[in-house]
Length: 73
Image 1 (cartoon, rainbow, N blue to C red):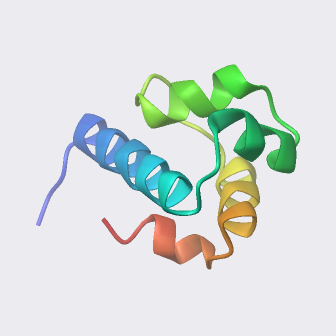
Image 2: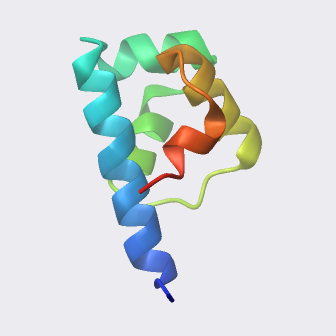
């Protein structure tokens, strides 16, 4: 099954936002934990940027999940 890059990034952003909200983290909380700017979290959640694997690992760690769970969309 093929998925477009845009759809994948959109789904990834939605997944990160949902997981963040389930843990009652603000975007700033997540950004602080990951040591990245809040605008970067916003851009990831809105699919405005194709983020790095390193950043995804930081986000997964902050959310208390395995990085592969972020990609299970």
